[in-house]
Length: 85
Image (tube, rainbow, N blue to C red; front, side):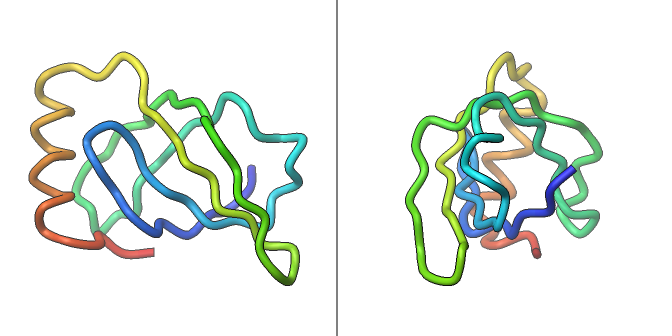
């Protein structure tokens, strides 16, 4: 398991910053911070990776298979701002 910082959250997926090796990227599971109030694991896929200084990477992720309730919760949370890191 690799930790990641939540940079931005949207209904379709998050933007994550991590030091995780690039080869690991592909399918990922996203668990939002407790402060988000959404206690679910989201199956996701990294669609692009941007390399940054000091071994950090930003991954752009898309959620898959979301139900209507999860979409509504994510939409409300993304409108409220950053749920924490």
